[in-house]
Figure 1 (spheres, chains in turn cyan, purple):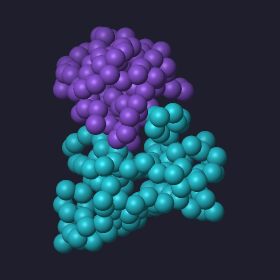
Figure 2 (figure 1 turned 45 degrees about the vertical axis):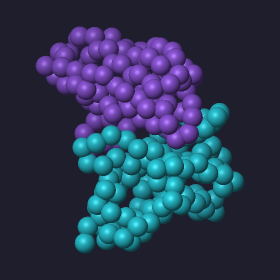
Figure 3 (figure 1 turned 30 degrees about the horizontal axis):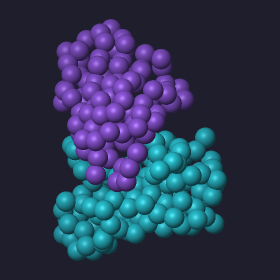
Length: 122
Length: 108
């Protein structure tokens, strides 16, 4: 059974960089397809951030691309997200997830990690 | 960017009733690139439907998806108490991947 777990600081100061890691168990990240990050501001909807393949191929949401970097460490079965120059608008629950398929772009997401609430505040 | 608009925003129904949720895309999406998710309070989204019609593993057959082009529907044939939640559609026919704003199904 594939499981994902987000980790990282729960409080980040404005203008700093938010760094999160997703640890995958039950499957090597090299055997999966794409792996992705999605976020959800409190009380709001879902926003896809970025996705990565084990080879390093990436997809980014253009709305965040200038501030986002996604990477993967196949030796640790982890992938990571860096979001720079954060503001209060970046306060959200951050989820990592596995894409179950790929065609034109990474496809449906399943399973998801439990999510990590990250607050941007001084 | 493909914008997904879900309606209604809130659906108030009783257990045993039928729920019909709509997802409309700003441009045509191939039906094989449309998914539905269920999210309960404090939990991560769970995949229900992918490829517009196909149920994910372990999803009861009271959940069904339909539609094509720009109009898609999630139907819950008979609501069970555990079905009261927020439902999101998602397209993966083009980047960026996008989600609808969600429909909350609440107990009447």
